[in-house]
Length: 206
Image (cartoon, rainbow, N blue to C red; front, side, top):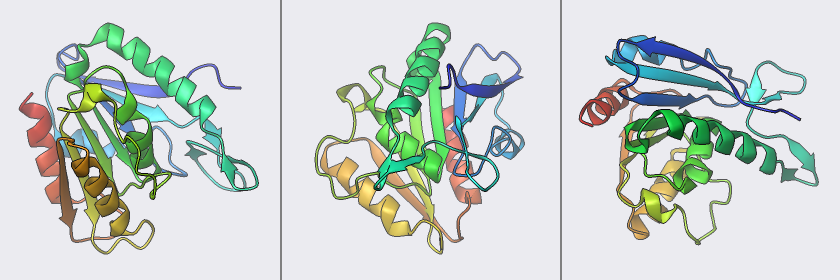
């Protein structure tokens, strides 16, 4: 059993001003989101590049869950590890100065865990993500996140996670009164340039 999440911290200028938490996708690691630091070029921020706790079987990189049996996936341990990580982060930063982005499986973490944190965040940004239970019509976020800016991005030609996954998540969030936006961009399973531009604007405006 893992005792705590591993991550790389990159401090740019006065890193006490705000934090960006970047959550990689399946088979990624703490280096997967590193290129965003240069491409976004945000001043005075601490970048927390998380690494998922479970090595991918018969493959490279890490995963945020693993199949236990009969199609059941482990969610309790990653939830505990993420809770502990954010609990520590909330001791360092005002929660509204914390921004969380996740790509692919990391987008799932944003939808199914981050939006249920009890402290209001500065922004949550799921990219090419999906819901663990896409048909579920219950609550999709904690009341503390009702005003949290949620910017969802997805490539219209994504051949790994269909764009409909983000459209479905967006519609469910919107129906429940979330402060959500959906930005579709031309491209496959990647982070679009226009999305990065809007992401930077959102973070710098806070």
